[in-house]
Image: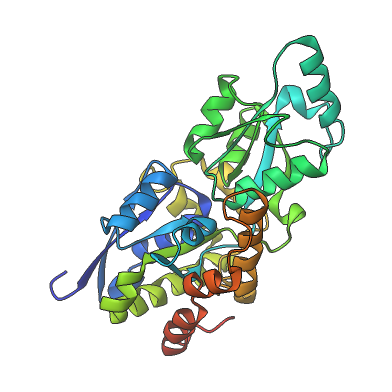
Length: 325
C-alpha cells in the first residue's frame, strides 16, 4: 500500500452500500491510488458524528443528513435510488391496504379500547424513510406526531424489534424488509419506488474540508465509487454482488434476502442515478420544512446548492470516462 493516499469511509449494513463495497472488494480504490479502509458502523448518528469530526473521511450517508449539516458536509455523489420499503407486522398486514386504507380505523379502535397506539420505526429523523413514512401515514388520515408513536431504530435492529413485538411497522432500506418477510414477521406493504418512483436515498457524504484540502483524493474516490456503482448495476454481476453484500463484514444477511432486495427496483448508477440532483435536494429540504426540521423561510435553494455538488461529480466522472450512463 506504500505511496497510496489513505481514506477511511464508513457504511451501514444495507444493500445500498454496494458501490463502496464493490469498489473496495474489486480493487477500484487501489486503481485510483487510494488505500481505503471501509468501517462498518452501527448507526446513522455514529456516521454523522464521525464525519463531522473528521474520524471518517466520508461515508455512505442518508441524503437529508448531509442537508441538515448545513455546509459542513457535501454530497458529491448519489449512491442509489429506490430500495426502501414500508413493512408492517403480520398481525397488521391483514387489516390495511397499500395506501394505508383502514389504518385510521385501526388506530381509532385501539385508542377506544385503551390498548394504546401503534408504533412505527424509521432509521433517523433526517432520512427519506422518515419522510416517506410520514407522507404515507398522512395520506391515510393519520397525524404522524399525534395518532401514532414514531421511534428511531438502526436498520440492522429493525427485524429483532419487530420480532420482540416492539414495533408494528417500519420504513427501512433493503435488505431488512425482505429479512422480516422471510422470517414471517411482517409483510412488505409498499416500496419506495411505488411511493416516489426514482426517489433519492443515500449519498456519499464527505467533510467540506476534504474537497478543500484533498481535491485529488476526493476525485479519485468518486471515480472508484462511480465505477463500483456501474458494476453493481450490471445484471451480469448480480450473483457476485449478492456474494459481496452477504459477507458478515458487509451486510451479513442471507443471500436470498439480498437477492430479493436487489430485485426491488434499486438503482445505483444507470439513468444518471449517481448524479446528486438539485431537484432531489429541494424535495428533501421541502419535507424537512413540512415536518419541522427546518424553519419556514430558510433559503432552500442556497442550502441545496451548498451541499449538493454535481460539479464535483462531473469533474471526477469526465476524467474517468464514467459519464451518466
